[in-house]
Length: 116
Length: 116
Image: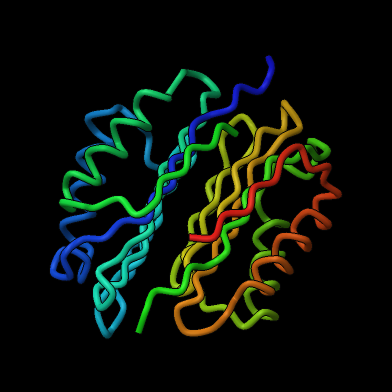
C-alpha cells in the first residue's frame, strides 16, 4: 500500500471575543462534527488560560484538529488535518473547516491548504 | 497589543519502521525538548494503534506539536507550531524541528514553513 497524502487546512480567523474566551462551546461543536462525520477520536486536551482564551488539540485516528484563541485580540488559529490512509477524507476535512468557521461567525484572515 | 504570527513547521518524513512503531521514545524526546526549550505543556495525547504506529498531540501554552506515524509505510507527518504571543519562539520552533528529524534519522520528503 502506498501513502495517500491527506488534506491539512490551516486558518487564522477573527471572531468576537466572547466566542473565544472559553472552550465548552467549541468542544461541543468538535464532538458533534467528529460524530456526524464519523471520525474516530482517540484523545483530547482542552485547556482554558486563567486570563481568558483557550487552546485545544483533538487527536483522531485520522490525524488531528487544533485551535488556539486570543480573545483579547479577537483572533484564533485553527487546523484540521485528516489523512487518507484508509478512506479519502478530503470532503470531511473541508466540511469540518467550514462548520467551524460558521460556528465562530469567523472572518478568515488566512487559509492554507496542504496535501501531505 | 497586536497579534504576532508564529512559525508553524510541517514535515512529512521517512524513517525506519522500528522508530515509528510505538511512542515511548518519541514521548521522551518531546518531553526533553519541551523542558530544554522552556516551553509549557498543558496536556498531551499519545495513542498507539493496535497494529503498530502511533499518533500524538502535545498541547502547549505556545500552541502545539503533533506526529502521526505509519511504520508499514516508513512514513510520518510531524508539526511544530509555536506562537509568538509573549516571546519570539521562532528559533525554538526551528530547534525542535531539527532535533525531531535527527532523533528519527529522518529523510525529509516535504517541509512547509508557515507564519501564522
